[in-house]
Image (cartoon, rainbow, N blue to C red; front, side, top):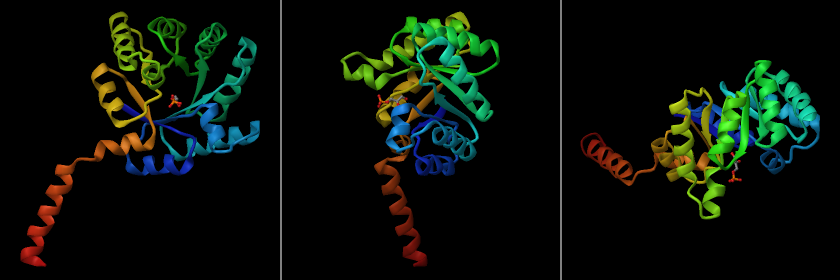
Length: 218
Ligand code: G3P
């Protein structure tokens, strides 16, 4: 399973990249706003800065909600850097835009997916990724992981190449559940990724190894 980091914070992106396990980055307008990045030129430069830190795909989201606006913005974003994947919301104009952009060999990530039917339409339009938001489904009492499994099963059964990118991951357990559910990618906050490292028996074992070494060599 690939790991993306879900942030526009350059320090966190660098930290994950330095760990050597990062496969890409996802951003959205809320994450860009959180970093105080405003204005079209600054936002575009920020995407390029992210691409220069990581080796993998970097999702950059369109703001337009009409077909013409989405394809114009999508083409501009894709031209910024070869690693850019254009992120498009799962609405009617978005599905048409994904179809258009994929016919131009521009890669897309269909975002704000909350049902298998939405994922099916995005895949049929040629999306490179679909992003089901598991945390936001959990928030309203619906099991987000079930949706990941349903979409992964559907894509396997019908041979879609679209990758399931589990998004809105809130904690480490979500990552482990995504593995079982068959997600291709998990995009996570840094804390959820580093949480995978934690185990008290590792800490205890290391402490013992060092104590035994120091008894003889200390
Ligand atoms: O990847 C989508 C993500 O940024 C949304 O996460 O926690 O706002 O639901 P959240």
